Length: 289
Image 1: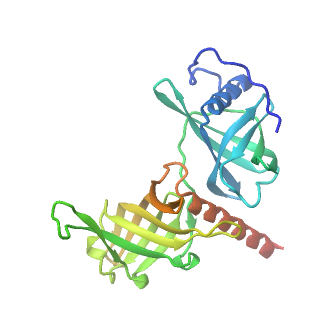
Image 2: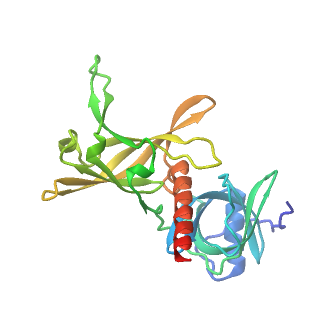
Image 3: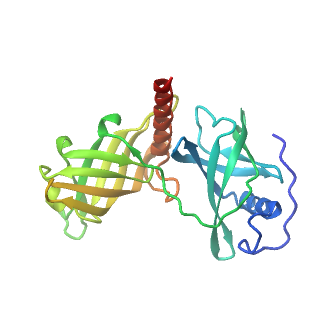
């Protein structure tokens, strides 16, 4: 792929001092991100919904457009005309500067070197990175093998080496309200044996099959912490806001617990949500015909 030529930068500029509407300033920010190989997170819109699972790096930019190389292998590239919200952070001295903007897809390209998206240069560069992973309302039956365990500290044989003991929560007592790449909301009935012990900062282990067609199987194990509990004494239900902390990944035939990226979440769950929304959108269009 032929890349655009880029001017050489001889000194570090203050990224917050430029005119956010100036094309040269926008190009400068993207060139800076390209030099540092900053990860550009792409959020695509489907109707009024939003997906948040594609990661990329900028590989070329000029005053009309910029090109990103996708880090995630997606079966179908976003089509021409789709809008994306783009987020990234770049280092300026000791400070990390958040950047965000909206951009329109011009075209996609897939070849031996990778998958690329061509975007029109944005009209405005923001420095406010208030971003959250999209949540979708689903039930646990949508995720094969979905199950939840509660973790308790136990001393075992050696009191100086505490470990976690996991207790599975009864399927009939647990409901999934929504899920994102970064967390989920669970509803737990009072009939659950672990109900009295479910408080903020408690650990949960979630397992489920988040495989999508055309990709390798994604039977995930994700560890999360409860960050908020809302209890209804009348309904005898606890609503748990859970933030994912680590996920089990297979690397070179070894299982490794990876820290969950605060911006991108768990990649396989993000991709599963993307496909879920695409399918839901397709069914809605068919019903409207």
